[in-house]
Structures are given as structure tokens and as C-alpha cells.
Length: 98
Image (cartoon, rainbow, N blue to C red):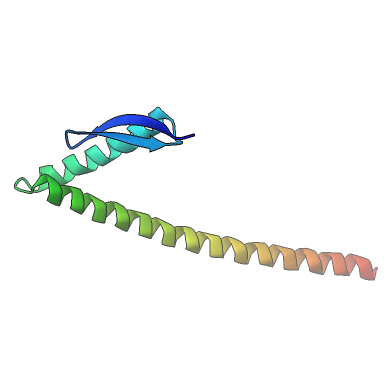
């Protein structure tokens, strides 16, 4: 059930409708605000729009890198599971031969 949650990002009041609870929505808003503050502190003359766009790029990069790492881990795990299944199959076949 979509609930409205009020947050402030870049001094802009926003109403977010989501199934997530208010604590999570505030956590996301705080994350975004912190990222924007980080960008603006490193580049003192950057506009808020530019800072927001840079944050979008940085967060998108983090997300894509995380997805790629997750895919590698999943593939590695699948290979290991197949190896274990093969070993179990060999053991089962060996015990059936007795």
C-alpha cells in the first residue's frame, strides 16, 4: 500500500509515495543529501543541478559495478555447486556399485 513520505533533498520538500516505511525513505534521502554535499564540498563552484547530476552518475556507476560483482559471485557459486553435485553423483554411483 503506497504511503506518502515527506523528505527534503537539496532544500526541496518532496512527497515520496512508496511501500517502504518512513525510516527507509529517510535513509535514502539522507544518503542522497550526503552524496550531494560530498560533491559540492569537492567542487566549490558547482551548481546544485550539476551536483545532483554528478551524484546520479556516481550512484549509477556504483550500482552497475555492484551488479557486475554480484553476477561474478553468482557464476562462481553456480560453478562450485555444479562441482559439488558432480562429486556427490560420483560418490552415489560408487556406493551403488558396491
